[in-house]
Image 1 (cartoon, rainbow, N blue to C red):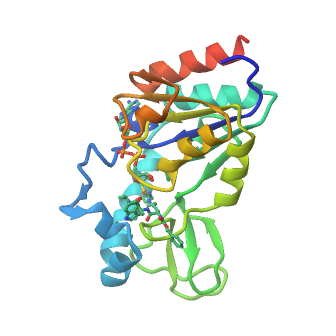
Image 2 (tube, rainbow, N blue to C red):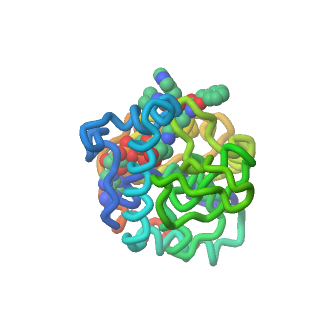
Length: 233
Ligand code: BV8
């Protein structure tokens, strides 16, 4: 990994696993016996808004009770010291990257600590619950939903992500199973535009064969070592 200037890092639930936040695979995609696809979809929200609001109220509380682990802290240090371009594209809805010191973070699937008003389209930080349909502080309508990208919805800031990948010399995927698109397709785009591709994961992901290099192990060990390697260059 020589003459690296611009880096894109994709993270998934695995980077927050050691902070105690359950991954999708570990919970074999179920929540209170509901398939995640059922609660994490606009149809699921229309069918049973209370169930979906409770699902995200629980996630919002879990996120606030969790603390960043060594992997988040290492990426925070990288962000503070890296002189070239760096973009951490996370599929996670927790704020552990930010609390770990990272600034250049893009939440492509939204954020647990944000509420979106479907009436006036404003988004704002939200740390409480939504299950009792509180009024939107901006327009007063009881139209707040989790600011989360559900299955079947377009992920956020895709243009920005593809531009960053187009400029990247290094693309690193950390703690994701490569099960969900378009995130799972980013490594192919990175290869197409000539980046070196590296996977750091507990086990091989569905897209492992697409990476130039794969290191297996827990993020709390692999990520600090990777950052130290980069920064000593
Ligand atoms: C869209 C927010 C189109 C919600 C999430 C058929 C084929 C291909 C695609 C599709 C298809 N049918 C439907 C689709 C599209 C669909 C999709 O990909 N479905 C999958 C199931 C096939 N995608 C979408 O719907 C996306 N939108 O396509 O829009 C469109 C076009 C035009 C106009 C409008 C729309 C939107 C997808 C976003 C859904 N929202 N999250 C919430 O969080 O509640 S997805 C959610 O699951 C995550 O965000 C993540 O993206 C995904 C998978 O999670 P991972 O992060 O990878 O976690 P996972 O548990 O799976 O894996 C953890 C990994 O970590 C494992 O590998 C494990 O080994 C490792 N690990 C564990 N512990 C550690 C560790 N690694 C290191 N250290 C450890 N300690």
